[in-house]
Image (tube, rainbow, N blue to C red; front, top):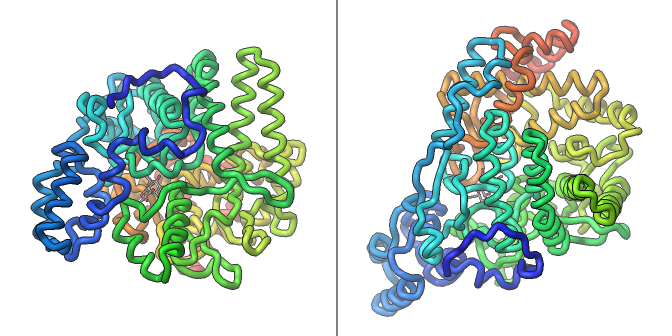
Length: 592
Ligand SMILES: OC[C@H]1O[C@H](O[C@H]2O[C@H](CO)[C@@H](O)[C@H](O)[C@H]2O)[C@H](O)[C@@H](O)[C@@H]1O
């Protein structure tokens, strides 16, 4: 079946739940589940150093022939083929990863985007130009044959070229694309940004939701819902209200789909959790999931474990102690303690509130008064849930809620502050909230890390734990504090933005790479841990830096000390800088 890429919206035809997925993702019988996938991904010795390699390879024959010939091989080898037998089969029946894609230079790429004029420091300006060049390296276009014969590929066909994250991630990722698109908009690449948003609209129209990334094996889960936020960004840059109005049916559909499939009732409020709807290990990390699954005795327990792994992947934070619930109800443990779907996450509910508010705003542009009221009411209900279930007066911040133990999880994650970013709080209480957030920052010593604010304060060797620090999370913190609009919060926001720009710059100057994640304990160093090597490229890291160079490039310089530059010296007292320095040195960390 080939895709016609009909961008029109037809909610009646879009699926209302995940049930019809098998039809919608025709190559799933090869790439999502089954004996072939299991046998190749668990071969001993292993065939691939990264499990994702196999599921990104193209089929040379139809799925039916491939499966039939594989079964014949299994029979011929008495169900116990050697690794060598399997390697021969893969070489004959699959083509290398990436053959379905072509490098693509965005047609709207500009040599000298105007944001470069907003940067004073010559070294930062040069760096900005190099980051702008990277858009050309990260551009990918699908070959026409993909949409004609999608059953030969794990990649999900989309009509327009995309900017990928980079490294092993050669397809689109849902939430990464939010920061990539903002970076493109700041780089005056409106056509590429619009094309990527249209891809997502087309995907919602075809499947009802946006999968985690652009591969069929991500079919059971999404990622933090940011499509409506992407449309808002596009409209803010272009004033093209019609684009948002035309997208409304699809945006509503994504919102309804997401809330229908993720809701829970807590303390009489309907809120959402991250969740997955598929069976089995993650195909792209099959071997790893089979190994952690060994810890469980029954098939049912294994399935539950895999489902919690995939729910964590839906959150974008795969993996993190944020999702561990130990026997005594703490965040201690390891991947076997994952209980993602029992934790009500602050960020997801704040984002859904934002979605509802934006949909109401777009309806108001269209003059659809009834719809404005409908979505304002939905937003208000989510806000009440956030306030009554997730706001924690004692901690002075929002906290994830543990439904198993019926208690808040008082552990730092940047997402605890995410309502500030999307204004999911009562604005009239900004002063009070600002005081309590600043006290929370102080109490958790969040300002003492030389390389940015870590994702948690637990050192577990998982990639979304300390000491790793991630661009989207720095963004949420910095933009959220800025929104609070009090002098203290704005100062901290500027200080953290400056530190992040300078730390990324140091790493780039040294290694010539933008990293997927960095190290909070060391200034200018890439991150590590988790199940794959740190990746370079890197879409969201580039996007965030381009945005902050555009916004603050006149105030940041590479020369000045303090993790800040001209702006930081303006907003912080000298005493403040010295205090931060002393605290960091006492903690045995190097500032730069
Ligand atoms: O292959 C392992 C996991 O890789 C992805 O997760 C990480 O990279 C994504 C792309 O940058 C990012 O969106 C995510 O936040 C990262 O943790 C993938 O999204 C996972 O589903 C996958 O299991």
